[in-house]
Length: 292
Image 1 (cartoon, helix red, strand yellow):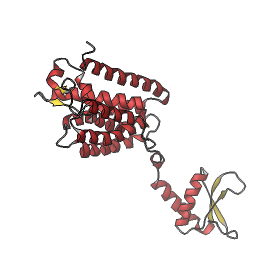
Image 2 (cartoon, rainbow, N blue to C red):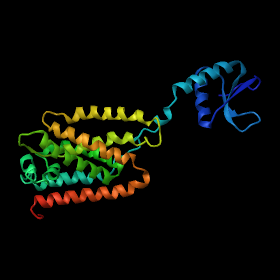
Image 3 (cartoon, helix red, strand yellow):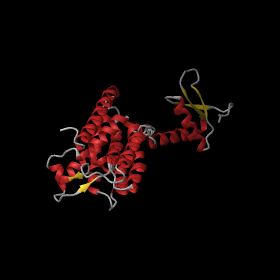
């Protein structure tokens, strides 16, 4: 793309070479001959167009800038650089090993028995999240849960994602026992998985302290996550109450992790690992009767 050398040209200065390249593409699409170059006698970069097309070129550039105002944030979607962390495989394998060790029959002393929980057996809120009723139940949680847990770990760090989702899943079990007055038994990692989804939904809170326009992401992201929750977390065969509570309980730790400054992430990661390992060990030791 080049403006004719013998024709009088008009120079439109830009703030960067990237902007000048964008303008050149816009103007070329409008059939305007254009060249990206420096300002004659100066150091600024911009585009040159035939003088007779100057008015039309300035109008096209103005329309382009108006229509794309605010898109700088959209080039970096909050959480868009997240990856699936490999340590999610360790959590998945733990679920498989526990299911194999129990030979497919969840031990009654580790189930979430709402009546026993309210009598003081608090560990059941944690141990139940590691158990599954059958192979199909396990397979569903391994596939879907491994993906969501891996993404949460990639977004926040493995300790924060695991600690936050385990705590939120246990809280969902506890709250569920108070919402439903009748005694019931429950088990499964679904509450933890829905908590991981809630944590991912909260990743849009991150840019708030530094970008005034970042709030536009919060409601759409939460809405998209809610739609996904409705699709996968409201099966009639599942515990919809615990699923919903897990999803909601996962949002606060995700928002907190997203809002904290980067320099604090190392400390938060270490603290989250301690919480995850301590609560899991405490729950299983209490369930096995090895700790009083």
